[in-house]
Structures are given as C-alpha cells and as structure tokens.
Length: 391
Image (tube, rainbow, N blue to C red; front, side, top):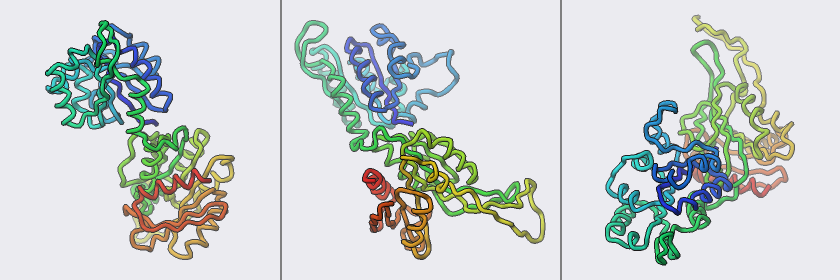
C-alpha cells in the first residue's frame, strides 16, 4: 500500500496543470484519488484523471451507480494529505465559511490530514478583501497554502493569481509527507505480533508480543517512502494505516502468508513472535476434564525457510533472549541465513514485550555489532532501517 493523496479539483482553467500533478504524484509512488466539482468537469473529463490515477474519480455526492458507502468519511480516513489544485475563490470561500454542499467540500469538512490549497484566479479576485480574509481564516485553522505566482493569466492580465507550477506543488507536498525518501521504491514485508496455537475449540497458547515493534518499523518504512506488506498476528498495538494487511492466526498461517508475499518484496523483516510449538493433540470440541496434558510439536521455522530461498533479498530477524544474548543471537543469525539480527534481553527493564521502549544490539552477517542504549521502538525502527541500507 502507499500514502494516499486526495486531489480536489475545482473549476478553473488551471485544471490542465492538475493532470501533471496527478502524474507526478503517481510516479513518486503515491496513491492518488481525485475529487472533482461539477464545474471542473466542464474543463477536463473525469476519464482523464481516472486514466492518470488508475482510480475512480468522484464528482457526485449521491451516485446510485456505486455501492453504498459514507465515502467522504472513508476518504478522510484514507488520506495522507489533501491537495486542492486549482482552488478557486468560490471553493476557498466555502471552506472558510464551513459550507459543504458538494462532495469536495464535504470531504474536506471531514478532513483530519493536512490540506494544501493552491489558489488560481484573476489578480483582482486574488487580491480582493474577501479572498484575502478567507485565506487568512483558513491559514489560522492550519491549512497550508502554496501561493499563486505572478504571470500572464488566461484572461490576458499579467499579475499574481497564476497557480503554482505542478513540479513545485508536488515537491512541497512530497517533502512534507516524505522528508527522507531513502526507502522510496523499496517493498518491505514485515511480520508483527504473536501467533495463537489452538488447544481446543475455545482455548489457545500464545505469547506476550504486542506487535508494537513491527508497527513501529512499518510506520518508519512508510514515512521514508517505502511500501509495506504487513503479515499480522495477534496485536494490541494499533494497525498502521497505509500497509497491505494480511491477518493470520497460527504460525503455519503466518508461514504461508510470508511465502506467498515475499516474491514481491525486497526486504523481509521478521519482527513477529510466532509460536515455536503447536498442540499435537488438538481437538475441535471444548475439552472437559479434571486435568489436561498437552503434547506439543515443533512449528515450522519461518525465518529459516525464508533464509533458504531469499536469494538477494535482505532478511532481518529478531532474537528475544533471557541469557547469553550475543551467543544465542549470533547462532540464530547464522542458522537463519539472515543479513541482520536485532537482539534484545527481555529481562532488562525497558526492553521486551508490550512496552514502548527497547534495548537492542544489532549484529550483521559481516560481523558488525552495534550495542544501542534504551530508546523508543519508533526510534529503534529508524536505526534498523539505517542498518539495512548499509548491508
């Protein structure tokens, strides 16, 4: 999955530049969804934007041809940022006064993501008291303005009011959303959370993994421009928005999900805590007895199987230990044919499961070892990504 740009297009001659905006965002790896006002369709057809974005364009608030969905709310949840280009005096005025009478303004009313407004209009309109006051009102609410520039306008006048160039608009928004794009073009498969191995129809064995480390890594990859496939077991941490999510329960399900998706990825990061054992004498009915003896058998070793077939892909594994950290982690690094291992002693305060911090040692296949101080898991995620780039 990718970060999503909602491009709002209103009715002005500068709309021809919006086609280039879509194209540039798509080339950078963004998912672009276009919302047009009815007036905008008089200049450019929705089909043009659908072809450029590879997504359906929304114009009508009430469209009986599509499945029911509170779409302006779903777009608000989906958006990483909104870009209004061109933004006419009319649209700017509506936003300033809280008017939501079409799909574009309704969507923006529900917006939680940052909004970038790119004005385009006649010089006299742009410099009028009404537009000046409306823009000031929106700026005070946190809207970002990419100011109009001076030039020859469609009406023949020369002055300020010309919409900024697409390359500048896209650069400003891209720098805001992805200030460090060193993972752009990289596809990363991340496993997160714990697996659950059923005992009977109502019980299972699991572990204390919360998925926080995996979510932190996924968030870091997305922020640095990469794409994430998240194979997710049981987690208590919130699922990161913008990933391709594959939900699993057992270790065997996680194994198949990883093997099915790894061909499309460049990097595999095994931050999940899959169960080493499963119940051999599982039965689907609830067990009712005075005592219960479980016979366990080894589960598939996902990291080891990935290591056998990874080729030139980079494999990162984790090692949660309670003693002899470096010895056990180094052995695991070799046995899994991994490129990097993140080792931590879960007995240390501030490390391990279901906490927001970690204390880790990074060991590479070349023998490089880096002992890290306590830091948040989100900070550690960036350190891990930096180390991957050095492999």
